[in-house]
Image 1: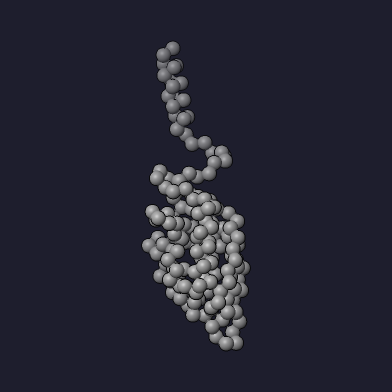
Image 2: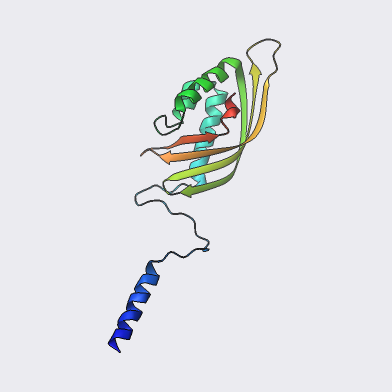
Length: 154
């Protein structure tokens, strides 16, 4: 009888460590990671809006984590070119989704940007695009570690 109890105890112990699939649970942040919420998303999106509307390339790039963002140097050059082509920006956004995956937060937003061409006779800018931002907490603020599509700044 003790052998049967021993086998049952082992079986119960093993089943407790097997992950269950199909449950509707959200990923939780890693131990010590900051939780990302919609209240965190709004200042990031508003920072993008303010940086563009004030025509501040420096403030725009400061929203990004240069060390963690793949291809940041090329993106920085793309933004510089963007600011030489357009001016007098107007930006609207509507956050449609926020989520967290481990230590990263994400934002999906409807993003509308308008700007005037810096060259006479060339058309202005008007883009309406769904943007996806991936963010990481750097200890004091959420910084953008990826943005897609990056063509929004072409």
